[in-house]
Image (cartoon, helix red, strand yellow):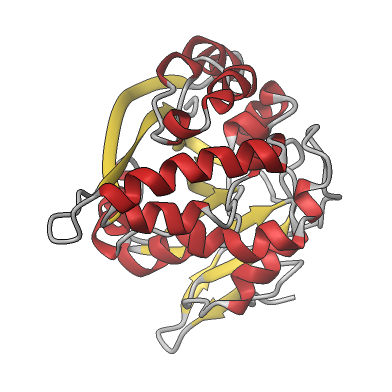
Length: 291
């Protein structure tokens, strides 16, 4: 099957009028797995609110995309977006980076359905699959992104082995996350229980590094990067009111409503004439595959 926005398999082909040759790949659709979050991977409600609840201003998205690309996106690169979700970064990388193709893989069929409902830029292709069994041939990707994914993985070492298999020698893996050591999201102010929950869910920096160095990766960089996600606390409240993240599935309805009420109180107290943008900070771990 040739590359297409709804592809489940990929073979040699050409993209665009320029006749850009795409390297031969074969894909298998991996069965979706569950990492203990109940039915979150098949949660159609979560998938439907995830993109609007997690999107960011274009300037912020572009800043993130260009940062990610600076670590290893060269002209003609083939990029893996592992855990692509609704495709925000897949589309952004195809739009703003000089890449040949972006392959977004996710175990959630509802998330991929939402990704395909959006305008899929040329060069972006989605497939179902798990990080522990990536549906790709060896050494086909120049750059792999795992954005807000690492804490979902039931077996990080298996994921690291798979990335060592599918990323080319000397290629780059970028992990965008918040390590347990640095949990600092604004949401914890309103839902304190989430801090304890995420303390159990999110791995520490040393744990992640150990998982990947065991598969031959070397640490290239570890930085912190923040960008505005909403223009005001009111907008932040409106987004979180939809429970647009898997972390909120751990809270009872009553606990969620209590936190949302506290957030609403602060949002209404914010002067409409001088709102303060809400920023989110993430740790960015950059790894280099063995040569």
